[in-house]
Length: 409
Image 1 (tube, rainbow, N blue to C red):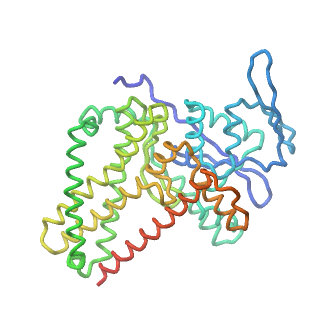
Image 2: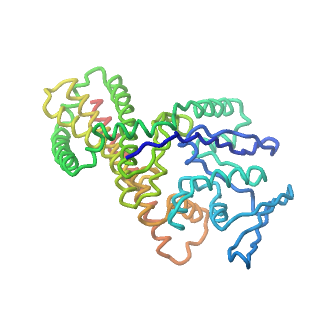
Image 3: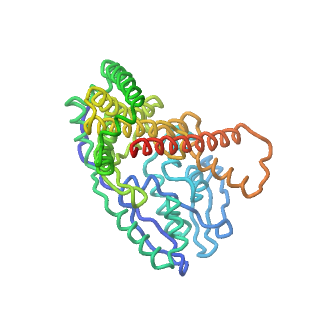
């Protein structure tokens, strides 16, 4: 596999954000690929713009004229740009738009979305919706001093991004130095055997949960914090394997780094958007391979705990194995309202990239008293997604509460 002649130049993305106080606008730069793909652009209200079709009899193609009624500015949109414009509703992330674009047209142009955003910015037709419910709540109450201080802190943390877009050659070298072995049948078979052995060890440990957790003694909370910190660094391994999968399928790792997700969740990330250019099998393996890191590490920790005498080492290893196993399940289980690897596999297979947003919007309308109407396959899918996700989260919380109670006895 040949390396590129020159590194990819970092794309600078700036977003036009409406201020609540005086309805003016300010420019904010999106500092990383992770923040970029999770941004949720929102077009101006329907009464603030007009859209008209213009058909070309000569070229045999359709274009659209988009008018800002307030500024009297006009834009020409292609069919592809209109497809994206219609999805800029404040709920759909750019990552979901890209997935929908691939499913609709079978291809993806990495420049079309940022170029369209810049056009819409200049015409003042686009605002941005905060990505998390916490940020939206803060935005609605930013006139309060405490809320404004919290929001300012989150904005500062969002800018704490350590990343590079010159990492592809490094991932190529890692792949050549042994990373390719991860994707061989022999290593896959060994990982399956290790996972089975580790899970059996975990079951044996669960049967004696009281004795195992008693090994923490008086240092329970210190041990749990240490387990969490150790787990945090395995997130980097998760993302690195995602990157190696891209190299395996001949795609480019566009960016790798560290940031604060939603302004307060520290995490590592890798830009895997280039995998859109590969087949669905490659996209699935890329998603599964990163999550499998937690299954392998969790199995190793369970085996260590199973072979250790009762005490702190056994308790620490068992707790580490449990958190790794939970990370594996959360990464691949699609029904938990979290858009992780398993969710992306599901929406890719179903061809509904905005499943979560559509399902929650439908349930919201029902709760507000709207009639459900005829039960279509799409509505049944929305109901099933919300029901399974609700039950799954309830069971997950109950299980972790049981673990904490057992540990504190």
